[in-house]
Image (cartoon, rainbow, N blue to C red; front, side):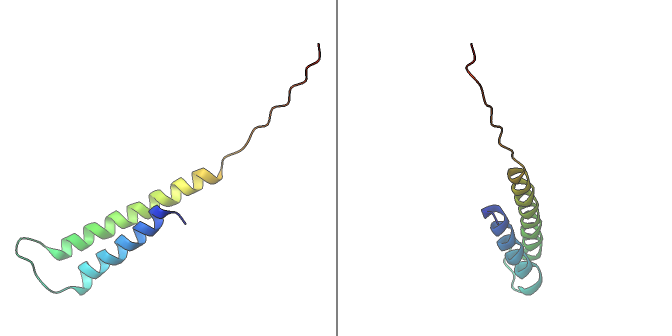
Length: 70
């Protein structure tokens, strides 16, 4: 699991808390909307982390042997 995936999970959790559990209000700040934005960013981070992790595992090494026959 990469750092991006862990960050995405943290953003999802923070966003869910802000979106669904917090009932306080700050003048000029919609905490529910901030929570939804955090959840969207967390989902995007998890997807990007999984894509980059999948791409890094598909690498192949090419070994080239040359002979010095003259």
